[in-house]
Each structure stands twice: as structure tokens, then as C-alpha cells.
Length: 106
Figure (cartoon, rainbow, N blue to C red):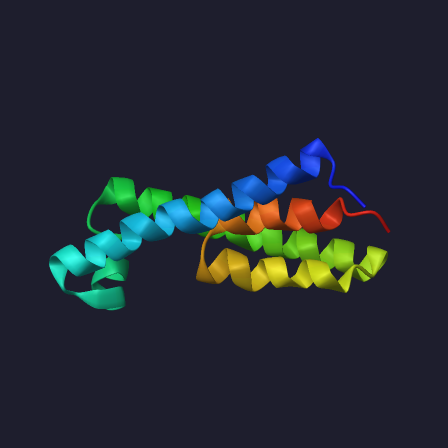
């Protein structure tokens, strides 16, 4: 069974969405020596970063509601793994991961 080009794009975006932002997070934590708490503090350092943090938080919550609603109807339980991916890694990983899982042949 081969993967469609669209599914390959979703998978590539999920991998990119996991690795690229994490590179910058880890770089920041190593440079500042503050760890995760310092990274979280940086998300609220000014109005611009606070707005971006809330934008991504609202998007993550919306994606979670959508995933739960669809899983309840479609019974595609594997799609639920996109929720921890969204909150532990980011929307840039969770959304394309869910689309990848959602478009698999049944």
C-alpha cells in the first residue's frame, strides 16, 4: 500500500512542525540556561509574544475540540494521538499529524 502525495505532505509537515520549532526552543533554553520555566516566561515578555501565545493556545483548543468531535463520529481512535502532539510539541505538529491520520484509507 502506498501513501498518497497529499498524505506524504501532511506527514512531512508534521515532522517539520515537530523538529523546527523544537530546535528554536531548545536553543533558547540552552543559551539562557533557564530551562522550560524560562521558555514559558519568554512567551509573555511583551504584548506581541503574549498575543502569539494566546493565538496558538486558542488554535490548539479548537483543534482538540475538532479532533474529539470527529473521533466520536468516525471512531478513528488513532487520531487522538494528535492531541498530546499538539500540546506537547505544538499546533505545527498536531494539525498536520491529525490530517495525516484522518486521511488514511479505512
